[in-house]
Amino acid sequence: MNDVRGWVQGKLIEKGYSSRVLPKHQLQISRDSRPDARVLCVGLGTGQAFDADDLDTAVEDVPGTGFVVVVPTRITHAAYERAEDLGVCVTGFGELLDALQHDEDITQHVDSQEKYERNRLIYNKAVESVKRKGRHAYEIRRKNLRPLTIVTTNNYEFTAEQLYDILASYRTIAPDLIVVTNPNCGGFSTDSMSAATQTGIPIVRFFDFLDCLGTEWT
Image 1 (cartoon, one colour):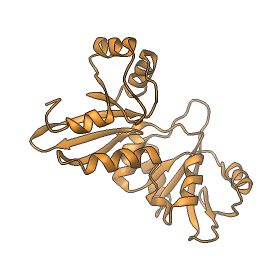
Image 2 (cartoon, one colour):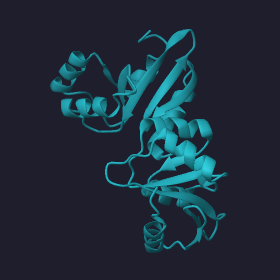
Image 3 (cartoon, rainbow, N blue to C red):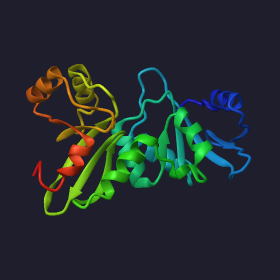
Image 4 (tube, helix red, strand yellow):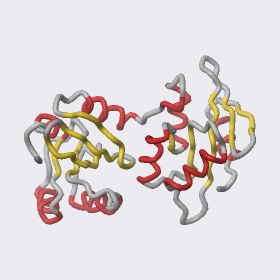
């Protein structure tokens, strides 16, 4: 773990925030109208990624950790899943800024795409529970139907190349479907549908997916 507190402090100053250094790679960030925020800063070297084991070690070494900012933002899907289990927010610097601006308790921060997706999934009558499996991947447990693992994307246009890129990024997740959550997506190109057929991983628009959660993909 590299000490990137100086870099984080410099970027925070640019955005109007002051902070002070705490032990063990931590910063305490002052906010005018909200409680101070304590974050653990993790710096990665070339070729490194922040994994679930790294998160376990961080939480063990720094008790009370609730927010981990990783620089640069190379976080494995397993780390995102483990973070949900531990009740810790793990994210990059951009999401730290969003949390500082909008959240009373930054440890409860959820990025806007995940918040949008979760709100619509958990209130679907066919859904029993939603568990995070990666950055934008979820295991959906349904009533009287088998669970589904999905990967989501908010791309407006969806190409075959994007499909292959998503499958490569989420190769450890083994999704049943890829769900496009951008409400402005009107459909899919011929090449993307052909790629979905070849890979055996269907692509579907979010609202179509929600409508059929209780009947399809059983």
